[in-house]
Image (tube, rainbow, N blue to C red; front, side, top):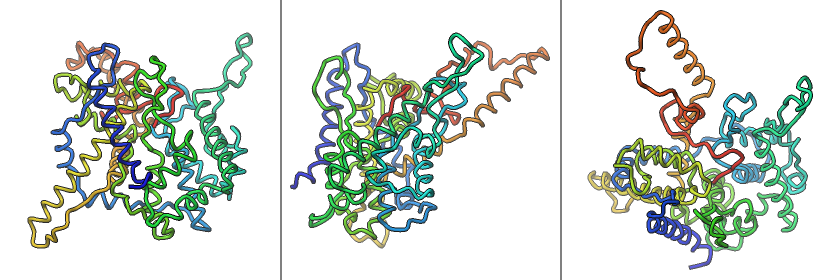
Length: 435
């Protein structure tokens, strides 16, 4: 086995070890990150999924863009993975008019499309010199807000707003990658990727992941902090889940493997799935991820407990590890069910079905993101309509038996812990980028 081939075994082993360690320490009062996989819930989820549908979705819909060269398309997807933070950025002020309402992923896609349409060349020199002004212009993110002066309220001044850190993170990532590409003598990410893949007898996703994590450790290979790591003063590097590298591997394999032989990964089905905040919250809602000890097997209570866990950055590592292993199990169950159905028919060939966890990640993230995608404006209108109806009833002297004894909605509920569709919605801590 080559060093590259071992990377996927190592990440799965690290995930299993992390969960086992959390289980052993669950008696500690200060520990709130212990979580386990409910195998029965995993079976129920598998029964509701369709393997052909997963594969059809994983094939990807083409972007409405025209690239002058295949290298430009490769570079575009590499940048999209590089800047992918996942989840949403929340400023902590539900009334702020400039809050980033859509997901960070959609915002990054919007910005890169803007760069593409403006004919910007995403070469190392450009990345090295990107500024806050460039990010605000191309990505449509205003990191500054206008606020009254402390001593002269009539005069407004510019101050860093809720999205200022988001802008800083984008600038920092692009500058660091641009500098690193210069050091490596590569003109852009596309050339770096193809150079890293050449020389191998059979192209593998493991080699791509290894090359990105080694060459760009602070961007592609950044680890998630372990629970209690800061308090213990541990030097452990954390849990490296390879999320960005795996996302990119899936995109390049499905979109460009017929254009670049170097991207026809022979080990694609062996790669673990990547984990997003959407996947974590939905696996919790469906009872697949449960806190340990479980809250009397109450799905809603358990899902709420997991959502609360995600609010602490150091809890993201065990949740990611559990979700990653759950995706492995789910992929196996779907493939086994498809093989059994095929065996029951006359066309059984004796070859078992196989589902790549990477494809399952993409499918679940896409469909579950849409379920959570109710526009904030529509949700606010519904709340206003309900409030107006309630006020009319109260003004007319009508009572509301169903509302008697109910506590008012909390600020946490209003700001998105529970989405408009009743689904737990992940919102990272203010100023945090995760996974």
